[in-house]
Length: 460
Ligand SMILES: *Cc1c(COP(=O)(O)O)cnc(C)c1O
Image 1 (cartoon, rainbow, N blue to C red):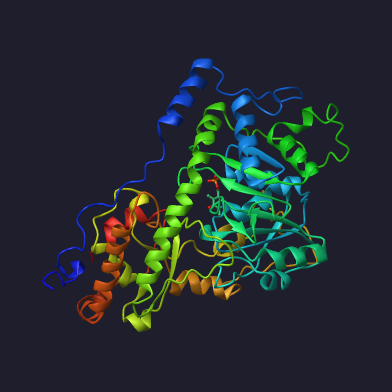
Image 2 (image 1 turned 90 degrees about the vertical axis):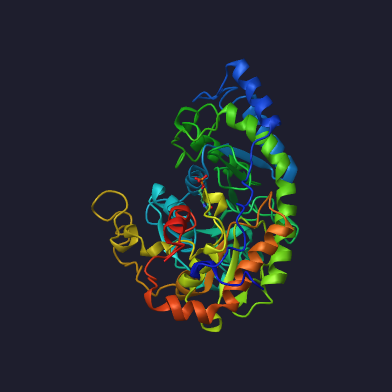
């Protein structure tokens, strides 16, 4: 092979053409949005009881379509999934001092949502196979104050829900599913999102399907659905009209999706299955190829379906002979500099374990006095480093992620990615010899920030 010198040592790149960009909007969305604009009704919600308490015709149609497609009893749109999580926390009845068991390995809102009702996030470790909470890790954190568990279906996979639901029932704990990254995924034949009491999906730009910003709450519980609708839309005004007996937690906010977004969402939903099929096909191929390389474990060890929001890989630095960070830089150098988030080839670490954030380190969330951490005076909360060792290990050592397993990429693109990995691994000793001594490992790549960092740091 003539082109075998690694690009990081000034050889030729495996590939010079950028990977195809993700195109999310089509003519269907455009035509539907035009209709909304021509109607002039960009949102039809009114903040009191009546026909428009539940929104306008597009919002209602989008919710109905989502609910029917997956067999959820209720689908309730919201203007972000962060607000959806806050709504879910309110709807399950969290109140000050309640403990909410959370994953530390997720987007920050999956835990901070508890604070909005005075709940205290208590972190349980993840299972290294699923990257999600498990019944065992949860059980170790249950106390008499535990009121809810927020299970995150990370990366597009899903948590092993059956034992989690069994445990939750035994202790009378509510289960909220953060399925932001796993729309359309099934676990034991059931769609994730409402296997627990309430849950839902994000519709932000980076997710499989999107409305710019947005989210969809789902539940099979009528009471919880009504409470969620009240929280979404100034519930305090509707207590009498809807004969709400338990009026706790129904003071509302404005978490309403617009008609414009709903019009887009209706057509986005039609695209989801195709995306999942394509991503699964690419992932199957890529895993088969990458698993032939030493030090790379791309087995997707999940318990249900997988949506491949990102594609996790376990990396063994000793076997390869390169630190994860240097490996990442060397592989990145084999490809054109990505122009946007969607073009990032590989990243490392995902997010810092959430309890290491200042909110938990200083135990300051609402106001200056330490609420809600100080609500139960007999209890102290421990957010110290080392508290979730599996999560810390995944973050620091073993994990690489790629958002490249996505439409409209092809098997040929996957083969290029494989070739980049293969070339770096075959040349690991040479790269280590020339660059190992000056590699700065202090920066852990974050996929959200990675586009800037990859271009700055792909070359040492
Ligand atoms: C994207 C995401 C969220 C937040 O969703 P937004 O719609 O951006 O507010 C929450 N949890 C997880 C796991 C996510 O990936």
